[in-house]
Length: 257
Length: 323
Image (tube, rainbow over the protein chains, first blue to last red):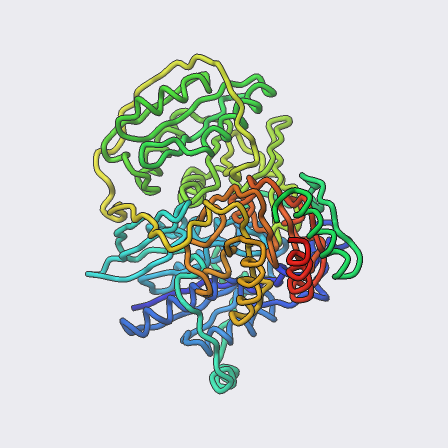
C-alpha cells in the first residue's frame, strides 16, 4: 500500500504568549519553539500502523522552509520511507487554498492508495487543506477521522461529530483522510533511528519543478490583532497565598463551599 | 446584490443550533445589503424542519429524498454544486462543524468560489467580503479579505452569532434531486452513540477541568485531590483524553460534553474554542493559567495567572480552612 502523509512544521503556541510582529501580519518567532503540527503526528502514526499491518511505503511531504527538513527527518525516524520538501522560500505569503494547490501539483505525479493529513493546523487553523486537496485530486475524502481500517480494498472509517457521536462510513480508495488527535498513540523516534534518518536523502522540490505556473489565492491576511475581551475577568493578584485566599473567599461568599 | 443562502444543518431529525445562528447572521447581512435570505434544506421527510425554518427566511429550497436522510458530504456536494451553479447566490453560509468542515472546502473548490473557514465576523462592502477568524491556538484574531468574486462561501463558528427570533413568511419550493443514489465511493453506514461512563459530568454543580498544563499523568492525583476537597468532579479538555489520562466522557467541548455547572474551574487549560463551547454556560467560571493571554481568561469571571502546581495545593488548603 502506498501512503502519503502531509505534515507541517508549526510554532508551538498553546502554552506561551504570542506577540504580533512589526509587519502586523505575522508573529514574533524568535522565542518560540517549532515542531510537527499536533494532528499531523497522529496522521503519520496512522500511516505507520497501516504500513505495519498491510506493508507498503510511506512518503511524507511538507511545504516549508529549510528547517522543515528536521521535521521530515523525525518522520523518517518514526517509519516513513521517503520525504519530500517543497521549498516554501520559492513562494511569497500563501493562503490555505494555495497550499492545497501546491501540494496537489506535487502529489498528482505520485502513486498512492491513501493520503493522510492532520485535521487542523494549530497556527492557521483553517481545517481546509486536506478536504480541498482531495477535491483537487478528484478523490473522495473523510475529515476528523478517529478510527481507520481497510477491508476489501475499501476504507472503513469513523468520523467524530459533535457531542461524542461517531459517523461510520465506507469509502473507496484512493482517498484522503484528515486525522483527528487521539486516534492512536504517536510513537517517539529513538535516538538511533533519528541518527540513521540524518543520513537519508530528502527530496527538495522548487516552484519551477511543479509544472504549474499559477496558484490562485482565495484570501489575503490584512492584519492580526489581539481578540477583544468578551467578558471582563477579575484577576486575583498577589502572592499565591493571597490570590488563593481571595478565591476561596469568593467561593465561600457565593455559597459554593 | 444576489441572495444570501444558508445551509440548514440537522442530525437525527433535530435542527442543530448552528442553523439558527447562520440564519441570524444571514438575515443581518441580507438586511444591511438589501438582499434576500434563502434557506437550503437537504433531507428526508423534512416537513417538521421546514415548519421551523419558514419564519426565518424569505425563501426555502428543499431537496427531500431518501438518499439525503443522513449527512454525506459527497452526496450533499453533488446536489449543492448543481443548485449553486443554477442559483448563483452572492454568499453561501455553512456551519464550521464536523458537517461543514467536511463539505465546504470541497464544494467551493469544485465551484471555483473563494471561501474561508471558521469565521467569527463578516463584513460586506462594495461586494467585497472581509472576515475575522482566529489563528495561533485562538490567541490572535486575523482580518482576512476574500478574493473579489461574484459569489463566496464561508463557514461560521458556532456561538459567534447568537440566534434571534424572526417572523418572516417564506416562499417554499420543493426541488428534484439531481441524483437518485448515494455515490458508491462514499457510503454512510450508521451513527455510533457515545458510551456512558461511571461519572456524568453534566450532573455535577462543581466541575474541575484540567488541560495540557498538567504535563504528566502522575500529576492527575493533584487535581483529583483538589476536586474532592471542593466536592467537584474532574473533567478535562481534549489533550487529556487524547493521552488516555481520562475517558472520553470526561471531555468538555463541542466533540465532548456541554456542561452548565454552578462553578467551573479551568486549570492549565488555554481555552480552544471547542472547549469554550462546552463550558461557557457555567454560572461562575474560574481560570488558573500561567499565560495571562490565554483565551480562557476571556470567558472567566475570576482568574489567577500563576503556576498551577503552586496554586492548587494552597488553594485546597484555603478552601478546607474556610469550609
